[in-house]
Image 1 (cartoon, one colour):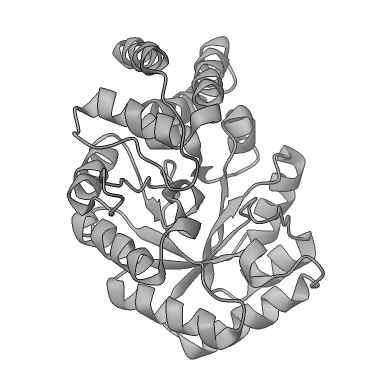
Image 2: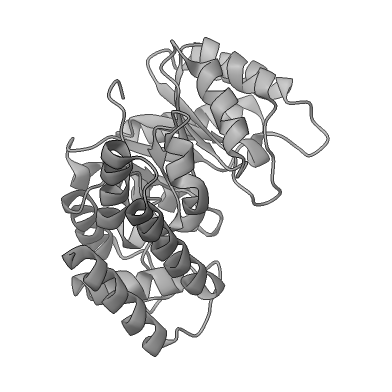
Length: 300
């Protein structure tokens, strides 16, 4: 995590038609993500339907991603089942045993809406003491409620020197700039979840993108970052970003099933578009159109 990565897909979890986790398909998907530009993988997150996985499945999904990544890129995974320190430590320990590189705390899981942000710092310090060799992350997941952390708490977490990954969901570039500045000189890297502001956020030092569009077009997100780094905010860069925004928005109403169908279309993977989280009928014509759009953009 010492280099600045750029493309961190939030790994989709495939299910069989009998609603079991499809580990074979998951492994093939991991290969495709890495082959197409992923610099890291965030497994067991909202896009991976973390709340619909039972504790054993969460650990096994993380293990599958780690084993298939085989050290090619780092893997992060969320602690989902814990509010009390003992529960958090237990699940974090299981993820460490599964081989993950970064154990991620979910702000809206470890904090109740009425809790002060400072409780997260106390929990993080206690977790760090119990697991002294583990890199940590933080995720402002919008479900079960959207908890955007205060700048003081983000700075305090950065100063622990234990946090390396922050998936931030403020959708506010000026706030991202503050968070990047507060993390300067520490291992913490801030990742934007929002393709709509990605290029602008790179200009204030955000390390990369970890959002929906990365799951289906890691290659184009990687290209966007490269172009923005070499050209700045040019019409070509803005055009590619608008294209990715449009793709994400159009697949949004039936996500993540639409994303699974789109990945299948792009890769030839034989996997189901089934979702436990948001079951929906998938528009095959839309999927074909979006896949063709991505293919044309990738060929340019």
